[in-house]
Image (cartoon, rainbow, N blue to C red; front, side, top):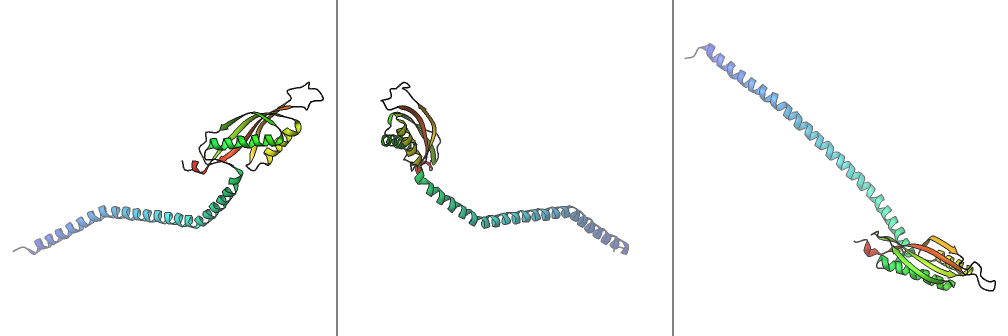
Length: 194
């Protein structure tokens, strides 16, 4: 038989062990619990922030679609004002033809043309023609006016007008030599996909 004091001591020892193990578990587990709660809170805040950004993007989507429609309409309206061709070289040849035809109509003789295509690979490619021509004052003026009013929008980058025969007789029409560079933008839709 055990003495009543020993039974009490064993019970106190058991309860002391339970309390000690409980304190150790609480001491180790409470920081882990706090860290898990904080991580859950951060994840929830991050998710709420992403959700708010997504809702804002969805609200702005309508405005962006309207802007895209307006820009597409302006782009489509601009296309007839550009040189067209299946390649940039074809558009440069078209520009050369336009300059030659305008010179012929104006009564100006084109002596040479040289085309240049920029190496830019995009939907719009700058092309230019360097032309040498001879004609009288009124013919040169008509040529320049024709190029200015042409449907594909063209820019006159450089022009040099000289008088090759400074001492021409009064009975001959004054002849001018013209060197000009005409530039345009080529539009080839199939280049956008490359």
